[in-house]
Length: 436
Image (tube, rainbow, N blue to C red; front, side, top):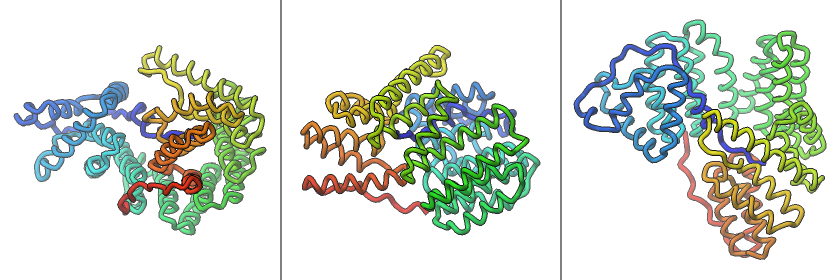
């Protein structure tokens, strides 16, 4: 039941449009006109409207190599403009920042976001200030520079701005709670979370979930579960939440509780939550896949698990075919997480040859298959087939993957133990430099 790091893929697809542009003119230097990359970058200044910006960003990210070159060139242009007129207006600068962020070219994204924060603050545009600050905070979060993320949150909270800016402060406070927790300052994070819970009756349900998030991060699972259960009760009791809105928040909360129950080894409770969600949302592929995987991973209801996972794969395919027909998707390909689930339930049924097919297909997905758990499953399957050499190679490949959760950290330890049991010393990837 692996989940891909899709947040920025979603952000690019839903790229933010802006109502108006700053009046800073684009550079018209001859050198820029002679450089096709610079010429294309400067055209971003004139892309207006949410749909046009979304389509442009989608077109840019399709060609990964060219997108990286564009970002690198934009970084050079920004450096060259110091003390001069900036070649990018707010609109163009934000598109470059988003593209750089998506490409993980953080060294370019950071100064662009900083420029956008400064520009929006000078204009006293609430919407632009929010967009720029949110982008910079997200960047520090994604690059694991949590101290800088906390500092940026505090700068936002300390400043004053238009009404839209002031209304956004509780949500930046929430980010501050999370970044503080990521710094390991759990007492401070919980104190801030409690302040948010106490800030208003109508918002208490929301910020109880923030508190639950911190408790989960701290490893206090029973307390985290209690916080989310209290949030669920407050959603029901909140007169401001009605109908579909209330049900949507309840479903989201139940889904989070499912993961907490799994972490706390309360599999029956996790399954009951997912069964409730499936009953309410019979066409939701995620809920069916997750229930199938959880049962399979715990050697429960294997035939029913296989059925649910196959239904999830079919539902996902139909949804993607519809998106392609509507022009919102270029390619229909299976969800790597669902393929991994299918391979795992087949593995649990000792259908090793059958299992290896979807597992290898999942691992071959460059974007969604780069996950430690998937490669661990591939290795286990090879080993069950007596293919020791292939299993060892897959486990070594798994160790190259980044930990996306505490579950991954635990699995990494188990993989190292598996290699040791086969008389192989694990080759650990080089340590990354400290972020802050």
